Length: 494
Image (cartoon, rainbow, N blue to C red; front, side, top):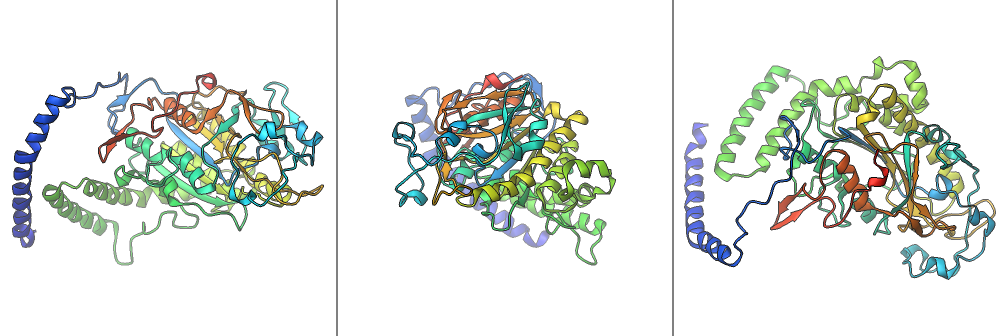
């Protein structure tokens, strides 16, 4: 340390001198002028009424804005845009008018993706799969969603979701960050920033990826990025295999005590740099070093499924024994929820069916249906569903007309941002409800639309957060997850 004392003192002197000249000349003058032009500028913004303590979880909020219904979120994101017409939104009119042109009065001026630019005809196409109506909830479920239909009384089915984006990457980013442009914090990062973590030995935001088919479209890591928030709020990806987190294990010749002493010395060096430069990212570095050290014990314990009984594996399906599969990740999500990880994000890729939809969607539904339903059942039987919000859905829906050549047993569907289906369960969401409605062709919403920002506002509300009050000032502007939009969908709250 003595070796660097002279350089540190010199840098501190230069920084202090610069700060003094800047603040005494421009700084105070600007403040004085601002106070004359805008008298309220320097007043502290009014604080929201906080009624629930967060104790010392390390979040930016000193307390919650109202009593929360959920403590954690498990987001089962089905990447690629699942077709609502083959899964949840039953439209017999599409089968009745199979092959006929979609009416201009229905399609209106809706913009189409570039993949339909050369298509001259837009023939309606129904579903090849049978639907059954649930006797109590009234909701319809495809034969592909057999297991999900069994939990229909535990979920709130929303058939009126809509978004602003028509292509995959901006639509995924929009759903996850509230903006179609990269660089904004994801939902999990906002939650980590605001609420902190109830478990000091695991990250508050964990991400797991799986593929339903080998040629699935890849994801942009911006979907779980922290954006302009401190970097330690970024999602930590758990991978399949013996080492879920890369570079966590000690190299050969380094034991845990040696690692601890190295970290202690590194923290001292970083603390000296923080005194000199005042960079908040130094705190993030220190936080990440310490978390990695604690995870050396906690992660191997999480990844060891030897304590899970056979009936649990049977409930999630045979793939739950295979690391990296969606079923395995769903089981891992329950184990993480038990350990109070705040935001657990699963991405299941492969739902983009522009052609060969009937065969491909069977493959995707088989990989997703049983594990998703099992997760809800498992949480419920352990008493965790009450305060865990589970979400299932993609970035947009599919068109009610066929893309490309239409045959009797084969077709595809293009992207459709105007309406799609998602479901939510637990965490204070009203169970056994079907919310929202589309027209007979499933093209336009006719009842209770739910925009992406409304969905995000509702999610934060269930966690005890007013979406208008969770803000972060960056480059002179106050940002929030819902930007300047969004309202809580109170009709679906229990």
